[in-house]
Length: 162
Image (cartoon, rainbow, N blue to C red; front, top):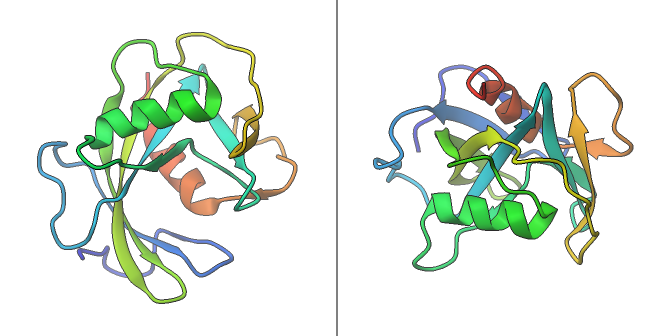
């Protein structure tokens, strides 16, 4: 797996590390580690949509597993809708591939990151996976643990989301 030179870009309290980010082309995913999931940084003005995952007990970007035969882009749109009830205004834009080293076994994998603007604010219904959503400006305090890897990735898209 390709990694950035030097220290990780971000590390969480469980030892998972964001080790690289490549804004290459969507059609050329990295081949040196699995690509099992997609994430979405959805923006409404200067706020990014964060979800509170019941299992991991943390605020993170919406996203999840890529189903067999599904593209990373399709998985991103599906997971965004399933987890939040929100859809992008128009097509999601590919932001890049994020490389991770996951604890405790130092397993390498990638996630595809997409970004876009909200098609409008909608009511949220908690579900089995997601307890709450918030439109976050990076300044206010969110109640509970915030996933620093996802925060780093969201910040990478805030300059390209307009």
